[in-house]
Image (cartoon, rainbow over the protein chains, first blue to last red):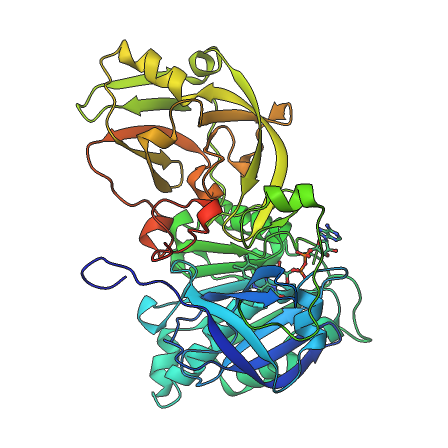
Length: 260
Length: 206
Ligand SMILES: Cc1cc2nc3c(=O)[nH]c(=O)nc-3n(C[C@H](O)[C@H](O)[C@H](O)COP(=O)(O)OP(=O)(O)OC[C@H]3O[C@@H](n4cnc5c(N)ncnc54)[C@H](O)[C@@H]3O)c2cc1C
């Protein structure tokens, strides 16, 4: 909204696919050039609209994976079997194709530096996408700040995937954590683990949260994103562990609620 | 017409389905859960429901009193702003018309706007005209069973002709007001009225 309270319409824009990045066998990132993009906050999403040659349309929402600091907008799409839109986005689109979208949308599931920390991010499957935007934003915004700035905003990420080759942004998460002692990344692999896997191998539960999450006394800002069963159970467990409900923000990817 | 997405065909629905889907929506068969934070859990022994007039008069019901009011069952299509629609959902609850006429006996008089407030702090605003005349309920049964907490139980507002965020989960109070005041999502960039048939998703949508 503008200061006088009148809102202008969030316009449909024509984006061009610049690059397609393979993240996992089922997940791709579309790197987009969006002329006139007004900027966004980490955690927001866009609406994507596809139009068939006879005018039939389908719309879906996708979180923005790129931080506000990037000039390009990235979306990371997990392909759902028999889905209407995600197979098209993750398979049919190539560099040079165009895509209609509008945004940014959503003003609640957002985090930026002034919001402060510590930060607790809990994700399942493609629920990592808006959380990754937050990690990338923190990394970019604090790149030139001293180590003290990072220590004031420490982050713990707990990320649930089915198997190691389905971990989205796996290498980037590893390298972010390697260069930054104030970022702790913990994986749990619920279906299948590589040989010698020493990490968690079950769905996120109370014991895991007690071990990995900031204690409630630290008053972390909590962001949970993923399939509904994961979000429901993690959010309720954190409240049971003493976290203030108002500091716990959730986002669910609608009907895609497979177990992770 | 907007630019064609090269090679996109989409999932075509029957003419009947298509005619029931507002623009930009698709049909889902399951019942997705959307909420901004943890699911609040309120015991039925402490739960009550209030209808508060702009004049300060309030009518209040305990759970037993509330569920003893004359009930209605209604079957409706619902439309979530995140794009899914679900057809023929069956609800049981108390019509807001019933609540208003019961509350009239306690001196609660109508005002043009309503703010629903909920456990967990959620709020949403609707014009009174959109919750009267058989258009809205406070529902506590879904598909013949008590409404599960993640879907808004013990009770949620049901205003099926508007986007489903207006059907506030965990509702505890309807506050009648002389002037309109935006609720939670309405303050965070979502449309103030939210008519799915006019695709009023975000503030600024006509
Ligand atoms: C705020 C928000 C942010 C999101 N961010 C992301 C993100 O960053 N990345 C991401 O990957 N997703 C994200 N999603 C989910 C995304 O919007 C889509 O829901 C998802 O991509 C599935 O869409 P689809 O058209 O491929 O599947 P749909 O066609 O919607 O179907 C979903 C599933 O249901 C089954 N199904 C449902 N109805 C039918 C039917 N009639 N016939 C056959 N099968 C059916 C399909 O097999 C499929 O597995 C987000 C959702 C929201 C609300």
